[in-house]
Image (cartoon, rainbow, N blue to C red; front, side):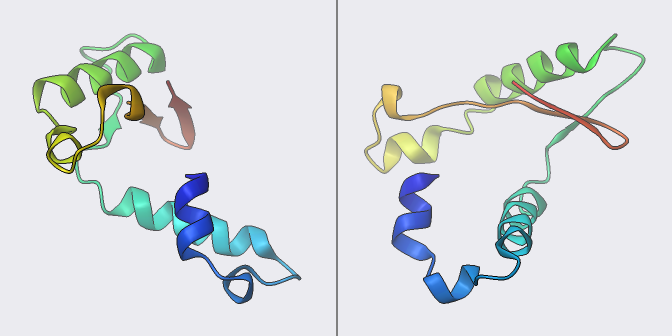
Length: 93
């Protein structure tokens, strides 16, 4: 994330008065582009922690990182995060 920010953001993008708004929009844009973000299925998952584990399993089973490997990234350079949502509760693991 630091590398993305350093290479793509401009001082003028972030501004001085309310920089949180810019970052908020950036993160929402990243999330909106992902159609398979996990929402807790109360029939299969007892907690948000279970949903995070389901998300991480989904990442592995669907090989979401294949494109990154194709671009030459090494396994140790890739980090997997499971995002779990239940209403306005969010857990990232």
